[in-house]
Image 1: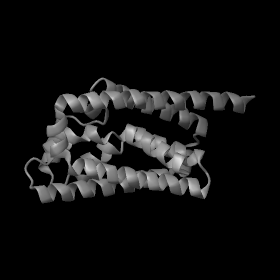
Image 2: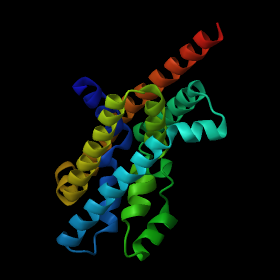
Image 3: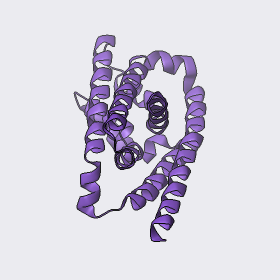
Image 4: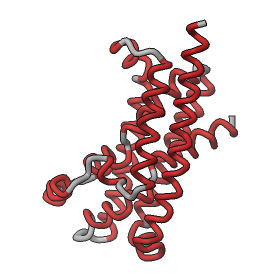
Length: 209
């Protein structure tokens, strides 16, 4: 189960990319004190865990409601994950999560930016959601699904640590460093997406034999 835990956690963190959220978090919390910033980081991570857990649990219900096969979900999820990685590789991470100037302005005017735009769509985007829906249908044992829940919680904890240290991370890595790491993560995420597309296509072909 440890192998599964680290595998799920690595895939989830690669797709979520908490470091990519650092510049937005810094810009949206520039006018609040350190204590409030840490409180906001905690709220973001809690919302992140709740959102991903909800979509993970609703996976089968959503597929059955819309009449979507697991093969279609794997292929579509793979494409979404691939596109997320492609946007990271090309330095368009925020744009891929629908974070534009208008969204930034609206967020700045709000008292709380924890749920939106930080937890969703910045961190809990289409890539991570489709990944977890696929996992729910791929891993059916109670122990496996419990392990995935633990991975979601650990990912939320890593999000909290990253955002809590956002000012330091921003200063230490700088804009160039953050972009370089995002591009590396983008390559990994694209590979995950391609793998899901391949598995989905081969599974579909096998089911038709």
